[in-house]
Image (cartoon, rainbow, N blue to C red; front, side):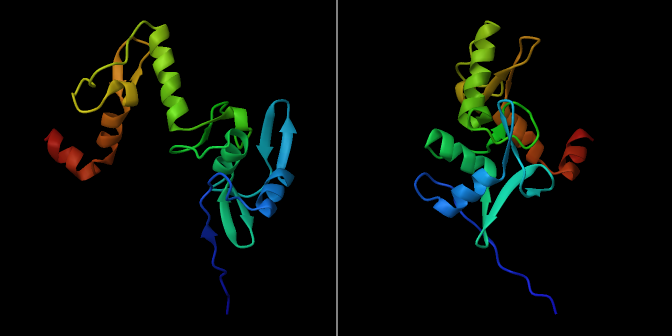
Length: 157
């Protein structure tokens, strides 16, 4: 008979991360130039996670909290696109990625203000610019992705 231990995922919020988890997190980092490469467990090979006392901590949100001192908004990704990098300055959350999209659009001379082309979302919150100088809406993109494939085929017919 095999026994399976129960593991819970802990919320990563400022001031609530145990010292043992912080020490274990820092022990699993490998420095490669300006990157901090995760040497611990990775779910599906791409999502760094930390297990301490049967508690699962997602490594990137933990690194975000340790570096920025605030809770991240949405998904935390490595902006440097280096696999398994958890360096605090390299991490981006939804807010920082949208800020970068707005700056990129401004460099192209495209203001991201007002409603999206479909008139559903605010471009300042969900908009982005393509290199061909057109604006798109991430909110509408996400809504299209959520439509089941069977409905997409029925709508096309």
